[in-house]
Length: 340
Image 1 (cartoon, rainbow, N blue to C red):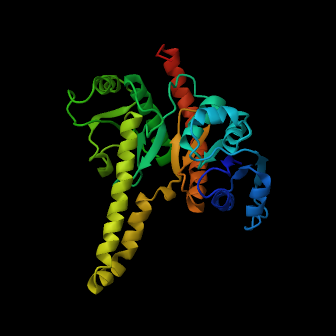
Image 2: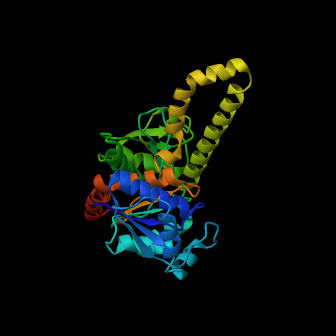
Image 3: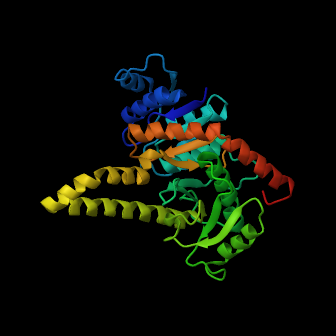
């Protein structure tokens, strides 16, 4: 049975929504869930739900790293009995197959780096973010903000990891990989982006399609989009803002007059389906990839549905052998003498 360590104390609605989502996931997906945190608080929340017969355990952790805690790397080093560190150690010690947390992104990145470690040959563990698109699966953007800068080899590695991820999670054969740029011409963009273009053009392990503009990836031009973390985070926050704006404007127009209300009632099923396609709750969160275990970072504002789906995504990554596939790919690169 797949074993998932869940940081029960991380997130704006912890532990109530985290525990609720974990119970739902254990029931629907037949996974073993380890709730990590303060036992008395977790037990009080478990009593709210029927969890008889479910494989749900509690792993004690006395400390919590707050969402707004500054210097997360120091907090992770100091608070070794915090829920996010203990959950990470469950995976590092082989007691769990994956970690799910809705806690601080900086703390998750630091804990995974300090206590879990990267796959040999992987220089950086970027954040992979599923972005809504016109395809029947998301476009995977990476880096979504783990590192503000990048060089050409980093982008090449992101392309490799993103391809493995999309092929395994969404069953997409030879995922199309693009580099985010201000134009599609080979002469455009900063030097490191042009250098990455040359590397990927000659990499037979990647189905590289060239530069992709920000307006094109939501329209399904590529399955994987690579960029530095600064650009990636701007792109994803812009997309989130546009989605909220469209939802707000649609609501305004639907309730503007009686005729619009009637029309809104007719198209409501289609609007509900569209909302599900762009809702982060449906996927569960972002992924820290390139690590020695599956590590999923749910949105800080996640409620039970998002946590449930985050656990489902973690399970799917385990079943698709994403970590082992990445290890195999990068072991070949290290053996070939690529920069480590």
